[in-house]
Image (cartoon, rainbow over the protein chains, first blue to last red):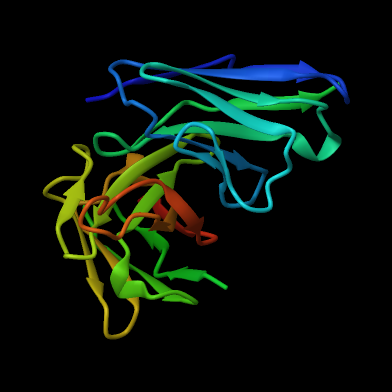
Length: 106
Length: 123
């Protein structure tokens, strides 16, 4: 089974900051990785697929990079509405999610 | 607009059964794989089951033999039959549309999600 390790589990940053979430995978998944945003009481929302392809309607301050076993989600110019939990998700072999990263606004 | 509406959740005793439904609309249901993903209270996302557009099925190890995913393309409905339920199956169960749907890429990531139906397993 593919294991995923997401870090940090929580981060606190100020409006306007640049934040990075990392996802490490136990074996190469090429670029078969997605990122989701989930706000309290809501369903997850797809942000990025194929490691770096931004979904339609997602603000350009979100970006993804990486391949193989290490991936990053970057939010530049953090906004108050970005307060949420973010999950990485591999779909190379079956489907696995990272543990989530809660992003808080200071 | 893609819409996924789950139903069938509720309170069930340990060892009991429940069938979840997901009514889909706004896309060509029969062309896409569909999945169930769950989230225990206060916890992260956990993939449960997937059915491809060819009706091939996949289940997570922790539900294999207890849960069965199926689909009816004539009514645009996805189901999850759950049996031998345990307390640790308590979760919000989401129906999700897979972005895959071609012979080359029958399954991919999940591009649309329902709002979920809550399953509580407790005596």
